[in-house]
Amino acid sequence: MHIAKHHQDIRVMDTMLTYLSGYGIDHHSRAIIELIPFIIEKQLPSLMPYLDSRMVQTKKLEKITKGCLRPKSSGIAESKIWFSYHDDFEKRLIDHR
Image (cartoon, rainbow, N blue to C red):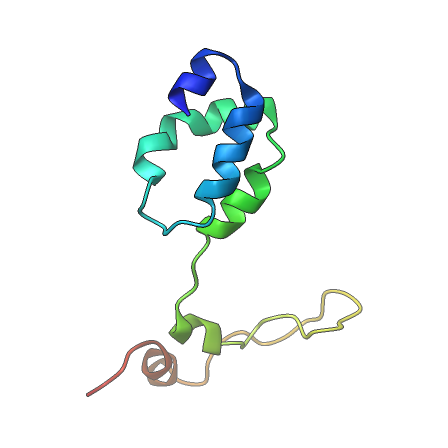
């Protein structure tokens, strides 16, 4: 990607970004971090799908839905987001063995 940037070959960079989105979170991220501002500036079409592929949610956090918007909601709805007890929240995040 660095060579493609040097040659201003945006199409090749976009194609490479598309392929890189399929790889693991720590496969290449450190190698291309300095290219991200250039990629944003050039508005590569693959940027948003690439950034979406970098977002990772643990299975524990996925189970916590308190305070989330309901599916098919017509808009923002007020909801209590605090747990009854701090211990309840901690139990949901951490496996006690």
